[in-house]
Length: 632
View 1 (cartoon, rainbow, N blue to C red):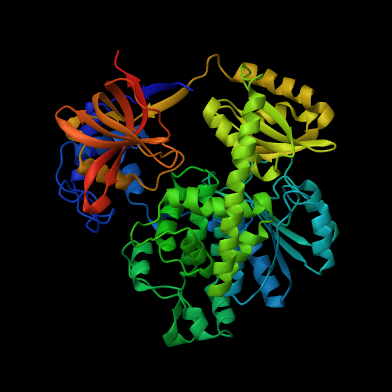
View 2 (view 1 turned 135 degrees about the horizontal axis):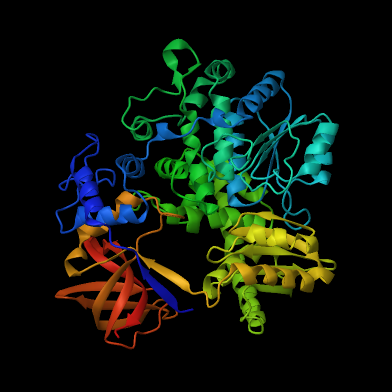
């Protein structure tokens, strides 16, 4: 689909001067931001270059960051700035009840969804309980036979096993019947979730959800794994009780990987690090173990496509540091199987979102999410490597199935492509790839897409949006024709009776008629216009300061006008990419364009990203072209 290029407004001169002045003042002795040392945080000294601070000022302005405290928090996210977990209204109540269960030796079950966010959340709590010497059970519903959410049949099985406490992760907010069942059967249900509340709140023992209107938590974008992490922090905050639990455990096991000096200095933002255990005073817990959970938190947060501003930025920033030296044997095996070498290239959000998360998701998409959770919890190297290889094979199969369904879905779109919302039904489409296909189609056609699989009586599937269209509001508007639905404004799941399909589709289109404008175009936002002198390695490296990239903090794309194409050749296994040499002003640069046909014009405007080309020992800037327009 043709894209509309939108160049962001130029930063006003007065604001630019104020930001540049602040950046030049070197306000942080531990990591100066002077012109001679722009990127201490990026791990290397940036060379001098034209326009570096001015460009950084423009990028900060584009993100709505103009005040000194905002800029400081963005460029220097600090672990100690995370919000107090006890700001959640029911956190204290939940933590006290959990410690009561631990002290009494009660059986506990963690009930989680089957996506990467939920699996990571499940692992966060299981590792926390394991550290305390309390093994707990996990229950993940089968995507195909049970579907999303807390179901009563599963609760009956759990109740019959003698469990008296259930902690949900990434689900439960809208499971009113589940809360009633638990109450009637004397099971304390602690819900940790982040999904929108649709209708009444469940009458659970505790509801920990940043989207609960009755709650006081100051950040609503935290994910399911983030909420689980907050509960883990709450549990571990009682140092006296943690110390008592640790006193009965093997000191050698406890000391394994809890802290190391290099990571401690990173995570404590320059403060001296206390070990998790003070060996000079017995088994006294001094705090810090929860930081080793941050790699799991980062994986789930990026996988769930939530904002990487605010608290999530802190969690992911430090989670990436932890991932580079993860203590989890299963995660190390997954990293090895994926051929990742963090000594050569440190992990980033691409690693999380496009390498690790798809593998974890694949288990629940095609088989069962327990496969992914078992890997994350595995402590034996040989078993972990076996499980990682199995997960890799499942993911490869998932990729093949996705392509098949995507192709069949595109054929169905031909007759409905003029509609504002694309809804299609297929037989034999695996439920596990519905969301992936919907997301790809929404990206390609820039329209909300709903992909459903038809069975004997029901149509079940996933929805993904485009632009600002709110899926949850659309599904609420159409709810009279649905069996159930849930999710976020960007992504949702739903099911309906087959005989209600046409009525549902008409209702969705009715809602879209008043909420989607005519001739909606995909917008390609460009952060600034760059000239030849600004296409420098210093500006390329400058962008490291903005990482981690993700939702609400996308990797910057720039307009470079009047580019001459000197040469181009097709590369890739199917000749699907372009390798180019271009000229901007008097500067000649290499460029790459992925999934691009040959460019017909000899002079064009380009939309691009700056990337650092370190191939063969080189250290130069390279342009990654994302779109071109011929000169008018």
